[in-house]
Length: 81
Image (cartoon, rainbow, N blue to C red; front, side, top):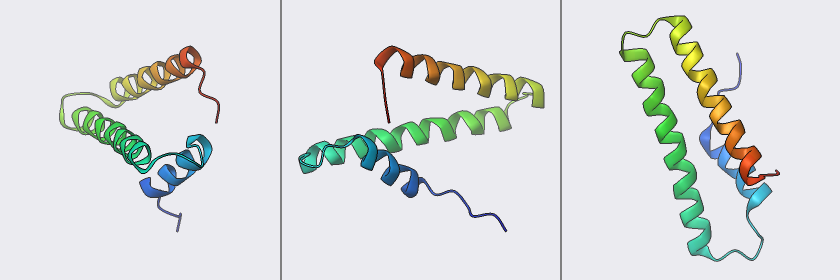
C-alpha cells in the first residue's frame, strides 16, 4: 500500500526550505495560514472539476493549466527551494 500524502508533511518541507530560523511566530503562523489557504483553494478547484460536467480530458487540461500558472508564478517571483 502506498503511503498517503499528508499536507502537514508538505507544510513542514516548505517551512524548512523557506522560513528563516529567526522568523517571528506571527510570520510563521501567517505563512502557514497562506499555505493551507492555497491547499484549500486547490481542493475547491478539484471538487469543481469532479462535480461539474467536465470530462476527463477537460479536467486534465484544467489541471495542466493550473500547473502552468503555478510554474509561471514561480518563474516570475523567483522561488528557489
